[in-house]
Length: 249
Image (tube, rainbow, N blue to C red; front, top):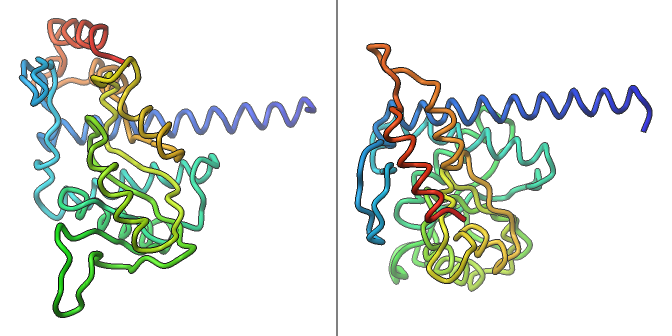
C-alpha cells in the first residue's frame, strides 16, 4: 500500500470512528431524555439486580419513534458502508409486537432520508384465515429476498429463534442480519458467551447494535443534567463496573 493510500485509509477509518462515536453519544442522550434508559437499582426478570434499566415502551409517540427509526437507519447505512450489511435489502422485518414500530420507522427513515427504498414486514401472532389472510403483514416475502431483522434489546435471543423459522416457512429468503438498539453484553445461562454471540453462531448472520452497554456508560460519564450535575454518579458507575464484571460476556 502506498503512503498516500495508507493516509487515505487512516483518514477514512478516523471518519468512521468519529461517526460511530457521534451515533453512540447521540443515542445514549436520546435514551436518557426519552426516559427509556434509567440508572438506579432494578431487579430484572432474570432475577439479576442491575444498575440500569431499558424500557422500549418509552418510545410512545410519533416524534420519539421517528427519531428511534432514524438511529436504526444511520446504523444500518454505516454497516452497509463498512460491508457488514448489503446495500440491496428488500425488507426490514420486525417481530410482533415490539418489533412492528421499529420495522416501520426504520423503513421510513431509510427510504426517506437515506435513499434506500425498502419495505417493512412483520408477523402475526396467529394466522389470519379471512380477508387478506396469511401470517405476514406488509411486504410479502418471496424467494430470493434479502431480509433485515430489527429488534430492541436482546436478553436470551428467544424472539429471534421463534421468528426465523416463521420467516423461512414463507419463502427461501436470506436473512442478512439483525440490528438491535442495545447490546446488554451479558452472559446467558448456557455458558460464557452472550446472547448476541449465540445468535451469530447459530444463524450465521451479523448482529449489530446501535450501542452496547459499555458504550452507554462511557458516553453517560461525560453528560450533565439540566442543573449541571453529572448524569452518572460514581456510585452507579461503580455498580455498573461490578455488574459487568460479574455478568458481562
